[in-house]
Image (cartoon, rainbow, N blue to C red; front, side, top):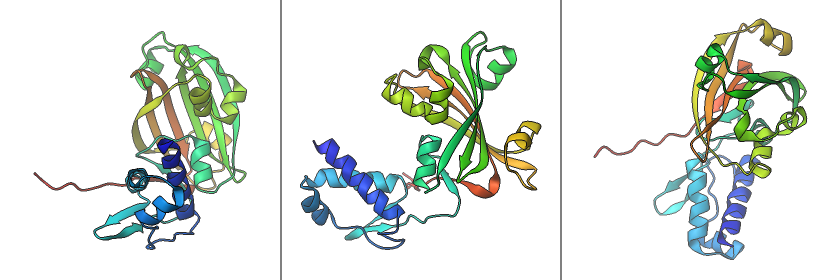
Length: 242
C-alpha cells in the first residue's frame, strides 16, 4: 500500500512541476501537508521527495520546504542518469512521438559487429533500425541490436510501439543498467536519407550497452540525434571530502 502511495505522490508532484503548477524557484508543499493529503506515513512522503531530489526536480533546504529547481527547455531532454524509452522521454517533454521501423532483421554477430557491440561473435541478434519523429519531424535515427535469447519474440509491430514496455510487461525483464558514451559524429548517407537535417553536418550520438537484472547485456544501442532539438541532462552532487 505504501509503495502505491509513494508512486502516486512522486508522479503527481513530478507532473505538477513539469507543467508549471509548481514553477521554478517555488516550494512544494510541506511533508505535513502531503502526509494529510495522501493519507500516508511521513516516511512515504520523504521517499517521494528524495526521488525528486535525485532526479533534479527539487532541492532540499534546511528548515524550509524543498525548492523547485526544474526548468523546462525548448528541446527534447534525455536523462543521462536514468534509463527511459524514447516514448517516455518524448511524453515527459510534451512532444508527440511516433516511430517508423526501417529495418528488422535477424543476424549473427560477426567479428565487426562483436567489436562494436561487445556481444560475442556468433551471438544471434535482432538488428532493428527506427526513425523517431517528434511532432511529425524525423529527428532521431536509432540503431539497436538485441540479444535474441533474452528478449523473447520481437517483431516490427512491437518495435514500432515500445520494446522496453514489451520487455517489462510481457517478458518480465528487469532493465537495470546502461553504460553510455556521448560523441559528436559526422552525418552519414543513412542519416541524410532518413532525417530532416537541414544544414547540419554532424549529429549528437548516444551509444551504450544495456544490462538486465541478471547482469546480462541484452542490447546495444546507437541513438543519432539532430543537435538543435536535443540535450542530455543530469544532476550531479558534490560530496564533502573525508
